[in-house]
Length: 512
Image (tube, rainbow, N blue to C red):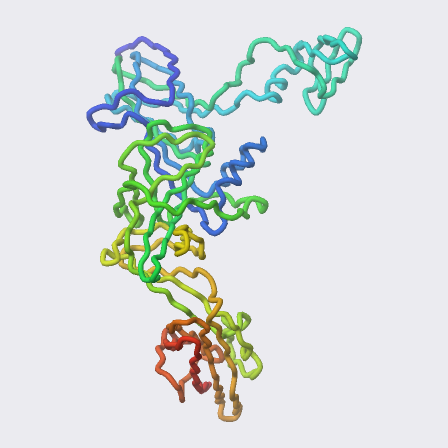
């Protein structure tokens, strides 16, 4: 058996790695891939930043809806034998079960014996607790002067209790300073990853470390600017990146994963589930953005340049260059069924003649476009918030006219954005007849739907109707053509003249 000399080496490495090897050229900085589960309806990055500024316990960062995978390349010197490696400036919210260590220079000659994540960072309270049963000195006010009290620390919270030569002394929080000795063992100033590595080959090695960290996420924000004719728009897209992971990533290669990636996490405390409104962004275009490609069942967005990801910040990066002259269509939709009946599909026929015959007067306004190359788009759109603007002819300034959420939208799919309700176009829905024959198990119901247009231009309106009373139905009379959209929905698409109105009537027969 060959005996080798056992050597223990302690190395402390900074975050930024040195030059990359030939296998992965250009990787002079860390690579960060960010996954997001943020709900754009309520996720507010600034709420987390505000909590941290107010000094709240950073443990809430695990509640950030997303996580990151951090990969770093470093050059180190290893001695033959057992080496202890200490990597500082890693993310504070590392998942230590995800840490991996790979020797790219001599993978067969290097073995990881142990790995540890040390996170017992120095704080005022922890420091005092390390001095329990040890002598400390406290300087406290005494009138216009100060008093120096020295004794053995018996308790550190909520009050400082000292055993002095004169007896036990209790000191409140109005002391001026506390004098301690050297930093006790077991406390560190920065989160640290520690490996014990057995190396058979001495010399310079390039290693790769990978880990997952909480406290980092992203979301997408879109700005749609309509033209004067409301038939085309410019669409810009931004990535809002938030980093509360407890580390900065200078000169990083940034990637984003869009899609619904399953990850097992503990349930969140009730107090952390609600988020505030989303932050506003400028409605302006940007330069070249992320490069997109299909990746497994998701989409991967890679920033073609490096960027500095600062700690405890949010930053906006262009997702893709502004798409100009996107063909859009404005839709007015009248859904006259009252809210209480819109989803009231029961296990039995709904025979109450008064149910669902109230009228909702509001006409909803939508913008619709197709995410294809013909519309100057055709790039998969991550879910996010779309804000819609239109220029005021008087001064050319952009005015906000509404916003909506979109889900992950593949290319060649339609995007429908609800931006509000019409001021000058209103509707009225009236039940004109209802008959019920329980013996024959039939029911007949008639409606008159009026759409009134107070604009000086004709308007196209889609009238949406739900046949909510029972599964089996037939339209026995209709004043206008209709489209059967699904098993319980029909659409009438009508033109309403300028300063006029349009009336649609129909009769539905239900059988069971």
